[in-house]
Image: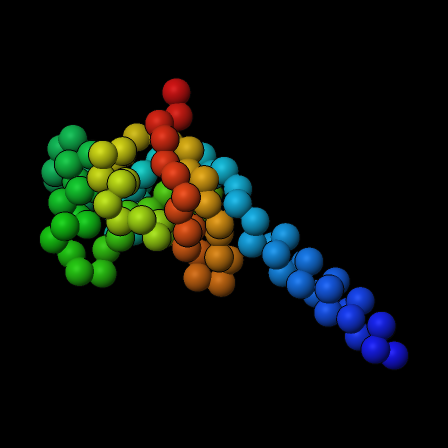
Length: 109
């Protein structure tokens, strides 16, 4: 019976670790308020809008939009230099919070 409990525990832990493995996400660095509709803020270019929204609004965060979903990024400094650009983000996605724990961000050329 103890062996069965150990096997069940290991199986559970394996699934939990696999669910939180590092992945690569591709999308555009944006902010959590405007996402892709920067026209309403009337700030151009879009990169300036993204930066201004994050800097001036307490609850607005840098985010990655992949074409369907928007994920808040744990790193709130690095995305500034990639504002409104297509990037690759490596990290772990926490599904419940829709936050990516960022390992790295690089331009997607």
